[in-house]
Image (cartoon, rainbow, N blue to C red; front, side):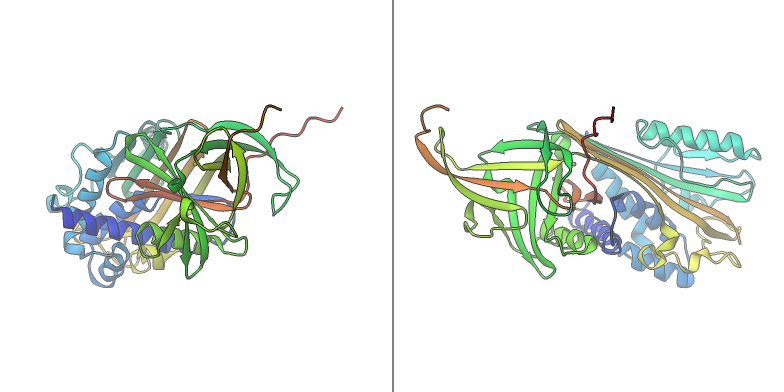
Length: 400
């Protein structure tokens, strides 16, 4: 696969993720643009008219080559031991499919819908559970006997931190989470450039890179408390793309270096400066109806059931009636895991002697809502994005 072509596909996927996260205004969420984009690309390649124009704009590539680009994105996922992806297609036996379209799909992904929705439901749920290792137990689809075609993608990311965190409990004293005892993950490192501060049009951002196995990085993104979630996440994506300069923590000034960050001069037994990180543990689950954002996903026209929109799929007229994604993300001391299942349904029509050295201690505390971006280190493909609006709190002792 041509490197430039693959890079263009990654840029297109990341652009969809950026448009999606920009719409988010509050509450904890996890979303996987990379789990929806290949499906949109395959639909775009088979569409016509205004629906084709909208889908082509959503995928950010020529519809004629969108299926090949989807294959390039899947090949990126396949080469990482931390990523598992799968596409699935199920159709009614009376729906004729054009071989020119089905040959663009991965081999061995076909199944049949029967006249028994309950049995079909069980098979689809089993597929979702197996493909995500149990993280997504059911397919986010309302299955009826009117559904002629189901096109789905499962995406799972599991990575182990190259350096584990230490579990702890913290009582927050300031900010929107003040007064709460929360589960925190602690890390002390002399590698200061794991944290950076960027100046963006949306405001200053502090980013922490947490490196995992299988070529996966999770970037935690913290803005000022006044910044909206969508602005923090889109600005974070722009920083990762090199659109805004970012300064490593070791080169930052001592006064007001960045959101959540402070600098102290302390006595230490080692001569090197230290970066101390404190971040809440979190587990987030989300359910999305992509039809609520037709302008992001290019689904305005193709949901009109009065006529067909995908002559490249079948001679029988088809319209999209469902487009949903269920997703989960967990950030713990030893690693990170996330999964998403995206599905389209079509019907007809993360006190001794003082020490001898005086060094800088850079403290980075994620003590108010923040975002996260899961990225394939080699290709820079953004796999999942999310927002942590609520920390994982320490359970209160039961009253006697």
